[in-house]
Length: 256
Length: 254
Image (cartoon, rainbow over all chains, first blue to last red; front, side, top):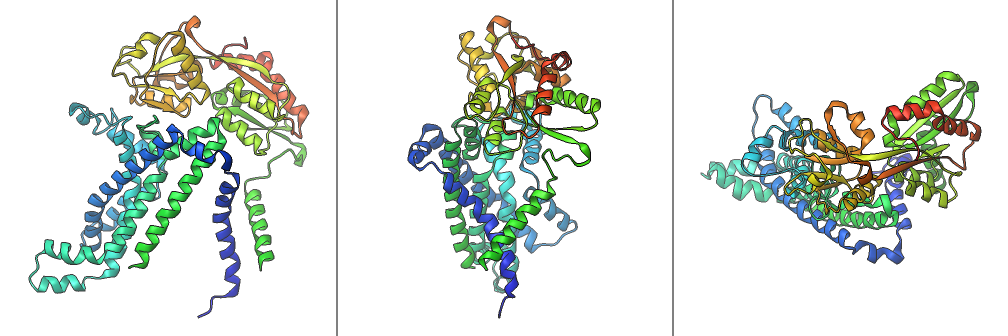
């Protein structure tokens, strides 16, 4: 089956539009200082913090997002469509708006802030705040890709298992989950990638302090103030991490 | 095929540029346009000065671009079309001068720091020394940006070793953390406390313990509208401009 030839022009144009800026970053990378720049103490701490918080928020996304996706894909109730749209809202919301919303929820004067304060928990300016911001923006990625996988996997095997006497929990654990594992994996990878790139909600809600809340994107933004070359070098690190992550996600996809 | 692609890409870029309005000083209908790049803390003052100039002369249009000082310099370095640069610190302006991007700068205003606290001052801050308290949620600018360098100077002159819970990118980020009550105190410019109105309260820092930031202004070397750019600079330095700046809380150039 042939593709109309003229389609290649806009397709190439689109590809160039996405790829050219990446080429520009590589072209501007100060190779002579590259290692020194990306191994400085603040760079290493920022990368370590980013990886640690992104892993934690991915875990929370899996723990809360898998049940959400299952409920959305396998049940029907009044207002489900509206609920789905609302849950996916962080996908289209500007991250800075997410940050403000989180501030008014978990901040000291927020909806839950006083309760937290009574429990002796302070969320503001802590690494916990970074994880909350990342989880907020990354959750929809996991829910969307898992819900899609659940719908395309269908319910036949589940129905058979249930007719053979398996209880719902057994069906979920032994049939549903294994069937959608590749979808879950790629969803988790996407959530991790989104967490890694989180900037707006974090800077609005969590603040910026080396080793505590200053993740790699925040470090890049700050470095631009004094050392543009360092910002470019760190940007390249984030690009490489992103490429690796997308590679993983593709593997997960193609296994479906 | 490849030539078509390149051509189409050029067209796309041209379209995108056209969609963003025809900037620059081409005089359609006899209007002369200049673009002023100014530090974010100058927003209200420069909007006033620009609209005064536009009101007096129908043929003049002043476009304002506000951002952090080092961002502005970086944008001009990358070829952004600007006619005037006003920065919140001399270090940023020095970078532009060193690259030959601007004419000779003149200091036109000064700004000092003030302690900002949430309304009601819940932590009971009365002096710079109080900022060293244990368990205080103190928020400062990062040392890399001008307000952070000034905060370091204040801490040093008070002999304090401050441990902030966050080092923000800009003074507005510090201000919003204080205004929302997340932070118990923050160091911002005097002009920010005035601009924030009832959202924060200010605690003065004595002049001998304070840091002074000088604001330089200069015309951009590549400007197509040198005369108008210079006129804008002159207005900032003249009595009317200085009155507007004083109203926003700026001190006169030292």
